[in-house]
Image (cartoon, rainbow, N blue to C red):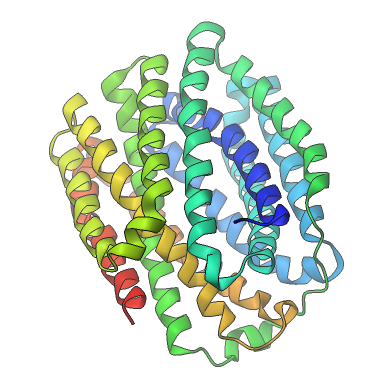
Amino acid sequence: MLTIEEKNLLKIQALGSFSSTLVGIFTQFYVFKHLDFKGVVLFNFVQFIALLFVYIASGYLLNKYSTKGLIKSSLLLTSISYLILLVFKTRALDYIVALGIINGAAAALYWSGYNLSQYILTHAHSRDHFFGRFMWVLNITAGIAPLLGGLIVSYFGYSALFAIVAVLNFVLFFVANRLPEHTGVVFSLKHFLTHIRSKRWIESLKQNMIVGLFDTGQSIITGILLFLILLDPTIVGFVRSSFFLISAFSGMFAVRVIASHKKIPSYMGVVAMLGFVIIGISQSVLGIVLFGLLTGIALPIIYVRYSSEILNAIDENESSWQHKYEMFIERDTVLGMARIMSLSFLLVLFTYFDRNVVAQWWMIVFSVFPMILGIMVTKNTTH
Protein backbone atom coordinates (compact mmCIF):
# COMPACT_ATOMS: atom_id res chain seq x y z
CA MET A 1 0.00 0.00 0.00
CA LEU A 2 1.12 3.54 -0.73
CA THR A 3 1.40 6.13 2.03
CA ILE A 4 -0.59 9.38 1.97
CA GLU A 5 2.58 11.29 1.02
CA GLU A 6 3.27 8.92 -1.88
CA LYS A 7 -0.33 9.32 -3.08
CA ASN A 8 0.00 13.12 -2.96
CA LEU A 9 3.14 12.90 -5.08
CA LEU A 10 1.29 10.78 -7.62
CA LYS A 11 -1.64 13.23 -7.68
CA ILE A 12 0.56 16.22 -8.50
CA GLN A 13 2.39 14.13 -11.10
CA ALA A 14 -0.91 13.06 -12.66
CA LEU A 15 -2.07 16.66 -13.01
CA GLY A 16 1.34 17.81 -14.25
CA SER A 17 1.51 14.95 -16.74
CA PHE A 18 -1.97 15.78 -18.04
CA SER A 19 -0.95 19.39 -18.61
CA SER A 20 2.36 18.59 -20.32
CA THR A 21 0.99 15.85 -22.59
CA LEU A 22 -2.06 17.94 -23.48
CA VAL A 23 0.27 20.38 -25.21
CA GLY A 24 3.66 18.66 -25.58
CA ILE A 25 3.51 17.10 -29.03
CA PHE A 26 1.50 20.04 -30.39
CA THR A 27 4.14 22.52 -29.21
CA GLN A 28 6.76 20.47 -31.06
CA PHE A 29 4.67 20.52 -34.23
CA TYR A 30 3.92 24.23 -33.85
CA VAL A 31 7.67 24.87 -33.83
CA PHE A 32 8.16 22.39 -36.71
CA LYS A 33 5.53 24.12 -38.90
CA HIS A 34 7.42 27.40 -38.72
CA LEU A 35 11.05 26.39 -38.14
CA ASP A 36 11.28 22.82 -39.57
CA PHE A 37 13.23 19.92 -38.00
CA LYS A 38 16.23 22.10 -37.18
CA GLY A 39 14.07 24.49 -35.16
CA VAL A 40 12.56 21.63 -33.15
CA VAL A 41 15.97 20.13 -32.39
CA LEU A 42 17.40 23.56 -31.46
CA PHE A 43 14.43 24.22 -29.15
CA ASN A 44 14.98 20.92 -27.35
CA PHE A 45 18.78 21.30 -27.36
CA VAL A 46 18.56 24.65 -25.54
CA GLN A 47 16.00 23.23 -23.11
CA PHE A 48 18.35 20.46 -22.03
CA ILE A 49 21.32 22.77 -21.63
CA ALA A 50 19.22 25.05 -19.38
CA LEU A 51 17.85 22.03 -17.53
CA LEU A 52 21.36 20.72 -16.85
CA PHE A 53 22.71 24.00 -15.44
CA VAL A 54 19.64 24.76 -13.33
CA TYR A 55 19.53 21.21 -11.98
CA ILE A 56 23.15 21.53 -10.85
CA ALA A 57 22.28 24.89 -9.27
CA SER A 58 19.41 23.19 -7.41
CA GLY A 59 22.03 21.76 -5.04
CA TYR A 60 22.51 25.31 -3.75
CA LEU A 61 18.86 26.35 -4.09
CA LEU A 62 17.61 23.46 -1.94
CA ASN A 63 19.87 24.59 0.87
CA LYS A 64 17.64 27.66 1.39
CA TYR A 65 14.44 26.89 -0.50
CA SER A 66 12.12 23.90 -0.20
CA THR A 67 11.24 21.19 -2.69
CA LYS A 68 7.69 22.56 -2.74
CA GLY A 69 9.01 26.04 -3.52
CA LEU A 70 11.00 24.77 -6.50
CA ILE A 71 8.03 22.82 -7.86
CA LYS A 72 5.75 25.86 -7.52
CA SER A 73 8.34 28.08 -9.27
CA SER A 74 8.46 25.55 -12.10
CA LEU A 75 4.68 25.61 -12.57
CA LEU A 76 4.68 29.42 -12.64
CA LEU A 77 7.48 29.50 -15.26
CA THR A 78 5.63 26.96 -17.41
CA SER A 79 2.48 29.06 -17.23
CA ILE A 80 4.47 32.14 -18.31
CA SER A 81 6.07 30.32 -21.27
CA TYR A 82 2.67 29.36 -22.71
CA LEU A 83 1.32 32.82 -21.99
CA ILE A 84 4.16 34.17 -24.16
CA LEU A 85 3.16 31.81 -27.01
CA LEU A 86 -0.47 32.84 -26.57
CA VAL A 87 0.21 36.60 -26.67
CA PHE A 88 2.98 36.80 -29.26
CA LYS A 89 2.03 33.75 -31.37
CA THR A 90 4.56 33.03 -34.16
CA ARG A 91 6.59 36.13 -33.22
CA ALA A 92 7.55 34.28 -30.03
CA LEU A 93 9.43 31.77 -32.19
CA ASP A 94 11.89 34.52 -33.13
CA TYR A 95 13.11 34.02 -29.57
CA ILE A 96 13.14 30.23 -29.65
CA VAL A 97 16.35 30.12 -27.60
CA ALA A 98 14.78 32.18 -24.80
CA LEU A 99 11.68 29.97 -24.83
CA GLY A 100 13.92 26.91 -24.62
CA ILE A 101 15.74 28.36 -21.61
CA ILE A 102 12.47 29.10 -19.78
CA ASN A 103 11.12 25.61 -20.44
CA GLY A 104 14.40 23.96 -19.49
CA ALA A 105 14.66 25.92 -16.24
CA ALA A 106 11.05 25.03 -15.41
CA ALA A 107 11.71 21.33 -15.98
CA ALA A 108 14.85 21.41 -13.83
CA LEU A 109 13.08 23.10 -10.92
CA TYR A 110 10.17 20.66 -11.10
CA TRP A 111 12.22 17.47 -11.24
CA SER A 112 14.78 18.58 -8.67
CA GLY A 113 11.97 19.14 -6.17
CA TYR A 114 9.96 16.09 -7.21
CA ASN A 115 12.86 13.62 -7.36
CA LEU A 116 14.11 14.50 -3.88
CA SER A 117 10.60 14.27 -2.41
CA GLN A 118 10.14 10.95 -4.18
CA TYR A 119 13.34 9.57 -2.67
CA ILE A 120 12.60 10.73 0.88
CA LEU A 121 9.00 9.50 0.91
CA THR A 122 9.44 6.08 -0.76
CA HIS A 123 11.08 2.95 0.61
CA ALA A 124 13.25 0.28 -1.00
CA HIS A 125 10.84 -2.60 -0.30
CA SER A 126 7.93 -0.88 -2.09
CA ARG A 127 9.63 1.12 -4.85
CA ASP A 128 8.74 -1.24 -7.68
CA HIS A 129 5.11 -0.88 -6.57
CA PHE A 130 5.41 2.92 -6.40
CA PHE A 131 7.02 3.19 -9.83
CA GLY A 132 4.54 0.73 -11.29
CA ARG A 133 1.75 3.01 -10.05
CA PHE A 134 3.79 6.03 -11.19
CA MET A 135 4.02 4.65 -14.75
CA TRP A 136 0.29 3.85 -14.70
CA VAL A 137 -0.66 7.36 -13.52
CA LEU A 138 1.78 8.96 -15.97
CA ASN A 139 0.44 7.05 -18.95
CA ILE A 140 -3.28 7.00 -18.11
CA THR A 141 -3.38 10.81 -17.86
CA ALA A 142 -1.18 11.04 -20.96
CA GLY A 143 -3.60 8.63 -22.64
CA ILE A 144 -6.43 11.14 -22.34
CA ALA A 145 -4.62 14.44 -22.84
CA PRO A 146 -3.24 14.21 -26.44
CA LEU A 147 -6.69 13.34 -27.81
CA LEU A 148 -8.17 16.37 -26.07
CA GLY A 149 -5.24 18.49 -27.28
CA GLY A 150 -5.83 17.37 -30.86
CA LEU A 151 -9.51 18.21 -30.66
CA ILE A 152 -8.76 21.66 -29.21
CA VAL A 153 -6.23 22.42 -31.99
CA SER A 154 -8.59 21.15 -34.71
CA TYR A 155 -11.64 23.12 -33.57
CA PHE A 156 -10.24 26.13 -31.72
CA GLY A 157 -6.61 26.50 -32.78
CA TYR A 158 -3.23 26.57 -31.05
CA SER A 159 -3.99 29.78 -29.13
CA ALA A 160 -6.83 28.09 -27.26
CA LEU A 161 -4.58 25.17 -26.33
CA PHE A 162 -1.80 27.47 -25.08
CA ALA A 163 -4.34 29.46 -23.03
CA ILE A 164 -5.74 26.32 -21.39
CA VAL A 165 -2.29 25.01 -20.48
CA ALA A 166 -1.21 28.40 -19.09
CA VAL A 167 -4.29 28.42 -16.83
CA LEU A 168 -3.84 24.76 -15.83
CA ASN A 169 -0.29 25.34 -14.67
CA PHE A 170 -1.35 28.46 -12.76
CA VAL A 171 -4.02 26.40 -10.96
CA LEU A 172 -1.43 23.68 -10.26
CA PHE A 173 0.72 26.37 -8.63
CA PHE A 174 -1.87 26.49 -5.83
CA VAL A 175 -2.58 22.74 -5.80
CA ALA A 176 1.13 22.18 -5.09
CA ASN A 177 0.62 23.67 -1.62
CA ARG A 178 -0.41 20.14 -0.54
CA LEU A 179 3.10 18.83 -1.14
CA PRO A 180 5.52 18.30 1.77
CA GLU A 181 8.53 20.59 2.14
CA HIS A 182 12.14 19.43 2.30
CA THR A 183 15.09 21.77 2.55
CA GLY A 184 18.61 21.96 3.99
CA VAL A 185 20.51 20.15 1.22
CA VAL A 186 24.29 20.19 1.66
CA PHE A 187 26.08 20.53 -1.67
CA SER A 188 29.75 21.05 -2.53
CA LEU A 189 30.87 21.14 -6.15
CA LYS A 190 34.32 19.87 -5.14
CA HIS A 191 32.85 16.87 -3.30
CA PHE A 192 30.43 16.31 -6.16
CA LEU A 193 33.34 15.92 -8.56
CA THR A 194 35.66 13.88 -6.34
CA HIS A 195 33.47 11.63 -4.16
CA ILE A 196 33.95 7.85 -4.30
CA ARG A 197 31.26 6.08 -6.33
CA SER A 198 30.11 2.55 -5.57
CA LYS A 199 30.06 -0.10 -8.29
CA ARG A 200 26.27 -0.19 -8.18
CA TRP A 201 26.05 3.59 -8.55
CA ILE A 202 28.41 3.56 -11.53
CA GLU A 203 26.17 0.95 -13.18
CA SER A 204 23.15 3.16 -12.52
CA LEU A 205 24.92 6.13 -14.11
CA LYS A 206 25.70 4.01 -17.17
CA GLN A 207 22.00 3.21 -17.49
CA ASN A 208 21.15 6.92 -17.36
CA MET A 209 23.67 7.61 -20.10
CA ILE A 210 22.02 4.96 -22.30
CA VAL A 211 18.56 6.47 -21.70
CA GLY A 212 19.82 9.97 -22.53
CA LEU A 213 21.30 8.81 -25.82
CA PHE A 214 18.00 7.57 -27.23
CA ASP A 215 14.92 8.91 -25.41
CA THR A 216 14.77 12.54 -26.55
CA GLY A 217 15.82 12.01 -30.17
CA GLN A 218 13.28 9.20 -30.46
CA SER A 219 10.53 11.37 -28.95
CA ILE A 220 11.20 14.29 -31.32
CA ILE A 221 11.40 12.17 -34.46
CA THR A 222 8.36 9.98 -33.76
CA GLY A 223 6.33 13.03 -32.74
CA ILE A 224 7.03 14.79 -36.05
CA LEU A 225 6.51 11.58 -38.03
CA LEU A 226 3.03 11.29 -36.53
CA PHE A 227 2.11 14.68 -37.99
CA LEU A 228 3.77 14.09 -41.34
CA ILE A 229 2.01 10.74 -41.82
CA LEU A 230 -1.37 11.32 -40.15
CA LEU A 231 -1.70 15.09 -40.87
CA ASP A 232 -4.92 15.71 -38.85
CA PRO A 233 -4.24 16.91 -35.25
CA THR A 234 -7.30 15.01 -33.96
CA ILE A 235 -6.04 11.72 -35.42
CA VAL A 236 -2.53 12.45 -34.11
CA GLY A 237 -3.99 13.06 -30.64
CA PHE A 238 -6.04 9.85 -30.80
CA VAL A 239 -3.03 7.75 -31.84
CA ARG A 240 -0.78 9.38 -29.24
CA SER A 241 -3.41 8.75 -26.55
CA SER A 242 -3.67 5.11 -27.62
CA PHE A 243 0.09 4.70 -27.23
CA PHE A 244 0.00 6.09 -23.70
CA LEU A 245 -2.94 3.87 -22.73
CA ILE A 246 -1.01 0.80 -23.87
CA SER A 247 1.91 1.97 -21.73
CA ALA A 248 -0.44 2.59 -18.79
CA PHE A 249 -1.67 -0.99 -18.74
CA SER A 250 1.84 -2.32 -19.24
CA GLY A 251 3.04 -0.24 -16.28
CA MET A 252 0.13 -1.48 -14.18
CA PHE A 253 1.19 -5.12 -14.59
CA ALA A 254 4.94 -4.46 -14.70
CA VAL A 255 5.59 -5.14 -11.00
CA ARG A 256 3.91 -8.56 -11.07
CA VAL A 257 5.61 -9.51 -14.31
CA ILE A 258 9.06 -8.52 -13.04
CA ALA A 259 8.51 -10.34 -9.74
CA SER A 260 7.59 -13.54 -11.59
CA HIS A 261 10.11 -13.30 -14.42
CA LYS A 262 13.35 -11.59 -13.38
CA LYS A 263 14.79 -11.61 -16.91
CA ILE A 264 11.75 -10.02 -18.55
CA PRO A 265 13.34 -6.53 -18.96
CA SER A 266 15.99 -7.99 -21.29
CA TYR A 267 13.30 -9.57 -23.48
CA MET A 268 11.38 -6.30 -23.47
CA GLY A 269 14.55 -4.52 -24.64
CA VAL A 270 14.48 -6.68 -27.78
CA VAL A 271 10.76 -5.95 -28.28
CA ALA A 272 11.39 -2.19 -27.98
CA MET A 273 14.31 -2.43 -30.41
CA LEU A 274 12.04 -4.14 -32.91
CA GLY A 275 9.54 -1.28 -32.60
CA PHE A 276 12.27 1.29 -33.34
CA VAL A 277 13.46 -0.65 -36.39
CA ILE A 278 9.94 -1.04 -37.79
CA ILE A 279 9.13 2.69 -37.75
CA GLY A 280 12.60 3.40 -39.18
CA ILE A 281 11.98 1.05 -42.11
CA SER A 282 8.26 1.71 -42.55
CA GLN A 283 7.31 5.36 -42.03
CA SER A 284 3.62 4.60 -42.58
CA VAL A 285 0.41 4.16 -40.60
CA LEU A 286 1.23 0.46 -40.09
CA GLY A 287 4.76 1.37 -38.95
CA ILE A 288 3.36 3.87 -36.43
CA VAL A 289 0.83 1.35 -35.05
CA LEU A 290 3.44 -1.39 -34.59
CA PHE A 291 5.91 1.04 -33.03
CA GLY A 292 3.33 2.27 -30.51
CA LEU A 293 2.21 -1.25 -29.64
CA LEU A 294 5.69 -2.76 -29.18
CA THR A 295 7.33 0.13 -27.34
CA GLY A 296 4.16 0.78 -25.32
CA ILE A 297 4.30 -2.75 -23.94
CA ALA A 298 8.07 -3.00 -23.53
CA LEU A 299 9.44 0.32 -22.27
CA PRO A 300 7.31 0.72 -19.09
CA ILE A 301 8.52 -2.68 -17.83
CA ILE A 302 12.13 -1.63 -18.38
CA TYR A 303 11.60 1.82 -16.85
CA VAL A 304 10.01 0.48 -13.64
CA ARG A 305 13.19 -1.45 -12.83
CA TYR A 306 15.46 1.33 -14.10
CA SER A 307 13.73 3.94 -11.89
CA SER A 308 13.77 1.74 -8.78
CA GLU A 309 17.43 0.91 -9.25
CA ILE A 310 18.42 4.59 -9.21
CA LEU A 311 16.94 5.12 -5.74
CA ASN A 312 18.09 1.73 -4.44
CA ALA A 313 21.66 2.55 -5.49
CA ILE A 314 21.40 5.88 -3.65
CA ASP A 315 20.23 3.98 -0.56
CA GLU A 316 23.62 2.26 -0.36
CA ASN A 317 25.18 5.60 0.53
CA GLU A 318 24.87 5.79 4.32
CA SER A 319 24.87 9.60 4.46
CA SER A 320 21.73 11.60 5.25
CA TRP A 321 19.47 12.64 2.37
CA GLN A 322 20.74 16.21 2.77
CA HIS A 323 24.21 15.01 1.73
CA LYS A 324 23.01 12.43 -0.80
CA TYR A 325 21.23 14.98 -3.00
CA GLU A 326 24.45 15.40 -4.99
CA MET A 327 23.79 11.91 -6.35
CA PHE A 328 20.55 13.15 -7.93
CA ILE A 329 22.51 15.99 -9.52
CA GLU A 330 25.12 13.52 -10.76
CA ARG A 331 22.46 11.28 -12.22
CA ASP A 332 20.79 14.15 -14.09
CA THR A 333 24.16 15.52 -15.21
CA VAL A 334 24.95 12.22 -16.92
CA LEU A 335 21.41 11.98 -18.35
CA GLY A 336 21.46 15.61 -19.50
CA MET A 337 24.92 15.44 -21.09
CA ALA A 338 23.92 12.30 -23.01
CA ARG A 339 20.78 14.05 -24.27
CA ILE A 340 22.76 17.14 -25.29
CA MET A 341 25.30 14.99 -27.15
CA SER A 342 22.50 13.14 -28.89
CA LEU A 343 20.67 16.33 -29.91
CA SER A 344 23.92 17.99 -31.05
CA PHE A 345 24.53 15.07 -33.38
CA LEU A 346 20.94 15.18 -34.60
CA LEU A 347 21.15 18.94 -35.24
CA VAL A 348 24.29 18.49 -37.37
CA LEU A 349 22.66 15.68 -39.36
CA PHE A 350 19.51 17.73 -40.05
CA THR A 351 21.69 20.66 -41.16
CA TYR A 352 23.67 18.74 -43.79
CA PHE A 353 21.55 15.75 -44.82
CA ASP A 354 18.02 14.95 -45.99
CA ARG A 355 15.66 15.03 -43.01
CA ASN A 356 13.69 11.93 -44.02
CA VAL A 357 16.83 9.83 -44.44
CA VAL A 358 18.16 11.09 -41.11
CA ALA A 359 14.89 10.25 -39.31
CA GLN A 360 14.86 6.76 -40.83
CA TRP A 361 18.41 5.83 -39.96
CA TRP A 362 18.31 7.47 -36.54
CA MET A 363 15.50 5.15 -35.44
CA ILE A 364 17.24 2.09 -36.88
CA VAL A 365 20.73 2.77 -35.50
CA PHE A 366 19.59 3.99 -32.08
CA SER A 367 17.24 1.01 -31.66
CA VAL A 368 20.13 -0.83 -30.03
CA PHE A 369 20.00 1.36 -26.89
CA PRO A 370 16.63 0.14 -25.49
CA MET A 371 17.95 -3.40 -25.86
CA ILE A 372 21.16 -2.52 -24.01
CA LEU A 373 19.14 -0.83 -21.24
CA GLY A 374 16.94 -3.91 -20.86
CA ILE A 375 19.97 -6.14 -20.47
CA MET A 376 21.57 -3.79 -17.92
CA VAL A 377 18.51 -3.54 -15.65
CA THR A 378 18.03 -7.31 -15.86
CA LYS A 379 21.60 -7.82 -14.68
CA ASN A 380 20.89 -5.65 -11.62
CA THR A 381 17.60 -7.47 -10.94
CA THR A 382 19.13 -10.96 -10.98
CA HIS A 383 22.12 -10.12 -8.77
